[in-house]
Length: 208
View (tube, rainbow, N blue to C red):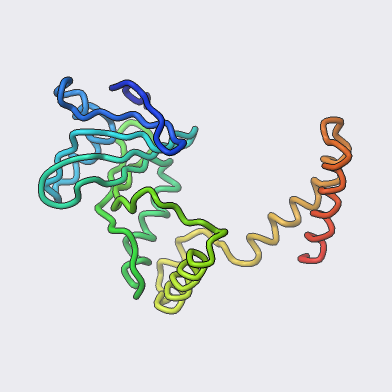
């Protein structure tokens, strides 16, 4: 899928944003793949009239749809490979509704007909990001995760989600440890870098 170049570009908080209000170029916004996918969801009378590109990577992209009508004034459209999108969809449909803490609203998903991708549409949580260095954010994040684990009931859903238990991360750790000796011998690694890698190896060894 090739994104349409529908407007001029600008910088918004360090992100490249493409914004089209749909005033002078009627019909262009409606042709964008994100909007076409949203229009296949008829549960909400939301009419997009603008698009912001928030993130673009090789395996997917994220847009903010600006619109009018009943319901949200704007929402997030995420395009991902279907194997990833289906997992995220199950989380929104079967895991988060069981939590006692709040979460962004999920509006639905659409699978593409000609490519192995899918679109997910969720509530726009705004531009303020989680800051790991903020004690307040860490406290709120820990409380949310705690509520998620307490309220989540074990159902058949767990059997269809990817394993992210201790064995999964232990495999990553062992993979890193096996590669560190070779990385240290590379000519592009400085003496300071070699020392940092030795420290990382030591810390990882303690975890193992």
